[in-house]
Image 1 (tube, rainbow, N blue to C red):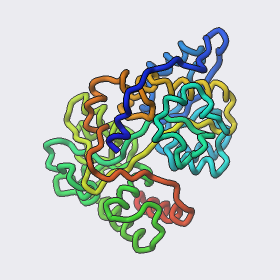
Image 2: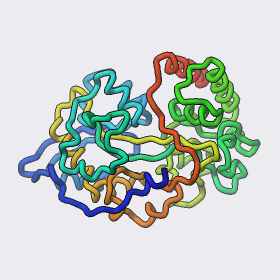
Image 3: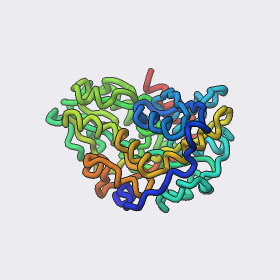
Image 4: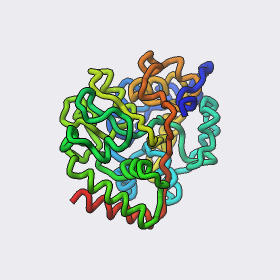
Length: 343
């Protein structure tokens, strides 16, 4: 996995579908995760193409899916993780796009062409990729990043100081890893074990939230918290008070993509953004902001020294398991477990 995260350098090539502002004036409505793109990137896109970007944000794949299912969102692009791309394809929620024909598709690393969730690359183009785990406040006594036990069965120092994501997908997948279970397991005993683990953790939880997680950890509001590796890196670069954990049991891997929801009004502008972002210099700009790895060969030439040496981005020798879409029986069981947990 470490080798996957460190893509080899390659020469950069021209933008391809980029169009001059005089011929490509228009709008693009982007629905993205909180703090996952900034004005530096969207302003450059506008300068290169003349297309103005309007951004709305969400905090989880579940929120994204529910919003798109409600219909008439007006969004031209969204950024789901790999298992939710699969769900959206199966449910007919996306517009087909011939990503393979885009000029900048040639920059996509071979390992990420024909992904299992979109093998013909008809619906999605690469965005960012990373891992989900937990992080600890340094010197707090709450953990040493040794085991997922520190998160799910916190010690006395962490009691009442644990931060957990608001939605179940990644939390439950980490629980499956800790308990030695398969993702999407429908075994009654497995699901009971997950429920017992989460209910046991609850008395130590300070907050269930997927936003502001690393700020709370850095400020000491929490001492152990669910974390995405890029978020953890961003906070560490501010004050170096937290450590992102690669526990011995492993972490959850994810790969986010750009997709065009059905009902989009500016489809051609969305395609232009997809192609534009696959240019190495543009994807590097995004990685430098978000602090996540990407699937574009040659982007590393444009990355900061912080990205090149990041302990959060470089994955050590621990298992990395990518989430996948699960069956309705499993989904219903997890929803029930999570609803009861939040009561």
